Structure formats: C-alpha cells, structure tokens
Image (cartoon, rainbow, N blue to C red):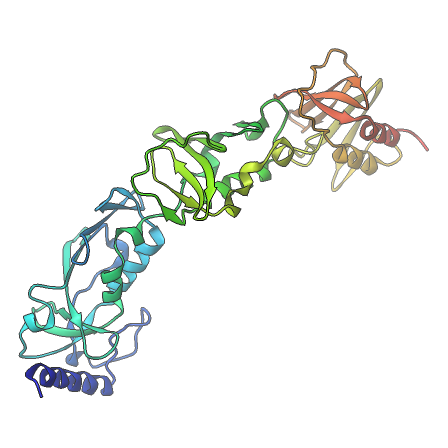
Length: 420
C-alpha cells in the first residue's frame, strides 16, 4: 500500500476516534453541546457582525469585499454592489470554523497548507484574522486548515466548496435599483404610449396632466422596481439601449443631495428582456417582473373624486349648485341637517373620477365645491365647475390638473341632501 494511502488511513482513524468520542466540529447554534475541547485546537474566533472587509486568495481570482455604511461591495476583481444576504451567509460559515481535530506530526505541505489552497483574511476593528485552508479531508464534509498555533487540523464544514466555486459573480448583487421608497419624490415612466409623470409634495402624490395619484399604487410601483433582478449579466455592454421600449427614472433625496436612478428596457430574446441601468450593469430580466412598466394614468391615479379616505376630516362643507350644508363628525358617525348624514358622506366618498386620454379643460364656470376640514384647518378643497357632456369639471385646489366627475355621482350626492 502506498505511503500516502497509509497516511490518509491513519488520519481517518484519528478523525473517527475523535468523532466517536463525541467531538462536534460544526457548531449548529450559538450554544453548542458540551465537548472535550482538549481534543481540539482553536482555528480562529471571529464575530461576524464585526467584520468590515473580506479577502479570499486562491481559486480563479482574488475576491475582496468591503462593507460601507452597512452595505457590502465587491472591490476585486470588479467594483460593484454585493448581495448582502450572500455575503452574510459567507461570514456565517466562516464564523463557524472555530475548532478542529489536530493531526499531529505531519507536513502541512502534504495537506495543501504550504502554500495554502485558499487564504481568507477578515478585517475587524481588532485587526486582521487569517484562515489558511488546505485540501479536503478523507472524511466527507471536512477540510484541513492551519490552527492558531500553526498545526494541521481537520475542520467540519462545506466551506471549501463555496470558496472553490463561488467567485465575484456569485456575490455580485443582481438587484437593478436601490433606494428608499420614502425618499423618492419624482418618478418618470416613459413608453411609446406616453409618459407617466409622478411627483410628491407635502405627502401627496400628483399625476402630471391629471390629479392625485393613489399612495398605495405608487408604493406598489416603487416596490416592483426594487424587486427587479438580473437573471444574467451582459459583460462589456456599451449603452445606452437604442430605441428603448420603456425608460424609468426616479429622483431620491438623501442627506448628500438628490440621487437619480434610471434604467432603460430594450427588446426581448430567448434569454429574457434586455435592461440597462444608467451608470451600472446591463443584463437579461424575465418579462413578468417588468409588466408594471405598462401602467397608465388609470393604474396609478386616484379613482376617487374627493380625498375623503386619504385625508380624514372632522367637517365637510358642501356647496352643490346652490345647495349648501355642513356635516360634522360625532364620534364614529356624522351629524348634519340631512335625513341620513352617513349616507351623504358615503355618497361623497364613493364618487369617482372619469379618466380620459385628452386633457380636461380648466374650470370656467363655478358650480360649487366640497371642502374637508379639521377643527384647526382646511385639509382639502375640490372645486366644481361647468358640465361637459355627462360629467362636471373638477380640480383639487392643492394642485394637479382638472378632472371629470360623472354627473350621476354628483346627483347621488345631491339626492342624499334632500328630505324624503
């Protein structure tokens, strides 16, 4: 039998004996079961939440990762955002490599440790910790490493599979855009069908050429953009995309100033849809997650003629073609000089906006208004104007363009003001 085979059998015997003695090498939790630490040697001890830099040498190319303001970046061999979750898993695996079974009186070079197969350096506020990783051990899911005292130990972990097969491309973030939804105050979505232009002022989203946008729908749009992921990168792509089918631009206000996020969408191929991030990578994205880009004014616009549900008030002042009255909130209900105040409020709440492609003419003749107030101030005012066909022109006095309210919805409000 060859000398190396005899040596491996001897090592195997040591490992099996240690395992039979109840030595656990992979720590499954922060509170592992008791073990005979005298039969093991420390490899290193690293607190994963203290690590700010990672460098791995060996394999295809060096990999360098750095944490900046709580976010992980790849610094070598490319300079791009890393996937925080995957870096976190790597740090978790590295933190579990704490102790190993000693293999006494052996040559480290025979176990892939001089020179090491991989070298891992972790930087913390306390300094740099180094892990030298050698060959895979004779027992499955074990590898050889250098202990803190310079000896050879066998460690239980799948770490070498990760180090050997997962380079920068594995840790590269596939997320297209990053921003805080609450800090975005302008959205422009262009397509051949038109431009969706949304802006936020004093907590209210407005749809250019129309009126209010519905808050939840705008948030859904922003979340859909955050959820976009590349399925495959296109290396060396030189943009911009010629004749894009969509462009999406977001303006985010941060402490450092305004940050612009933009992407363009091209044609579809068997690999997916071509998408390029302005100033960033390009790649293929599945068609499904891009469907939100086809939204129009009806999809994000507020469907309700009066913002009762978005801006709760204590008082409603109604002036409808000469019919004037006030409703006051009384606990959970309403009171006023009408047979059924709750029915009247419900009719105001359920009046809808009629959307159309062409711009609505401005108000030229006043017909009245509905005003929502708290005890301290006016929250909103919707002005009502002339009738155009089967609708009346209206406008939110806080901003936005004119819009149409079906006459039948206003008639329902008037009906609720009359005595039976």
